[in-house]
Length: 252
Image (cartoon, rainbow, N blue to C red; front, side, top):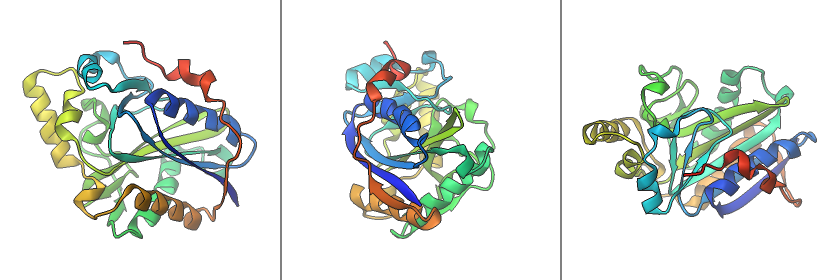
């Protein structure tokens, strides 16, 4: 089946999230989209329903990192040294169940990433802690997310709109535990607890294999080609992303 493939390169947080929203309207025409991208400068995204009171906006401002609101749910992510994927496709192509859709998309990611020598597996149960126990996405693992050696490796989030699915997720190349913990409005002792939690619960590409960004990008593409029988063609049009900036922008 024909899929559009978009390698957007790096962009700032607002453009990245606005383009993800714009993908939904394009995919409504019936052709699924896989987009791969990065973040420059690094950015901090919070879930659609997450409160800004949890976020240390002063620290992020000093670092020069933008803060953006994702159209999807879930908890906050520091986007720094990572490959990000986004998929937009009609709901009828997969399942009405969010959990089942996670599973199918995770199968494609695992299939591709494991061709690079990464020993990924799909989580069959949630972390003991609820995801709301921590403001950081990578502090807990949800069912059907991707792990390596029992640690969370890929953090994903999903939303539905007008019969369409949008799922996007972070594949970290490097881990920035201390910096990630500092992004939250916490006392010193709680920040140390979160940092330790992240060290114990999270892993990244370069902890397991010497790969570069292109290696990971190609792996993701291979996984979708195999699992979804995707025949990728370049998307030569323009995403009308500017109309969505106000939906993702956070004023701090």
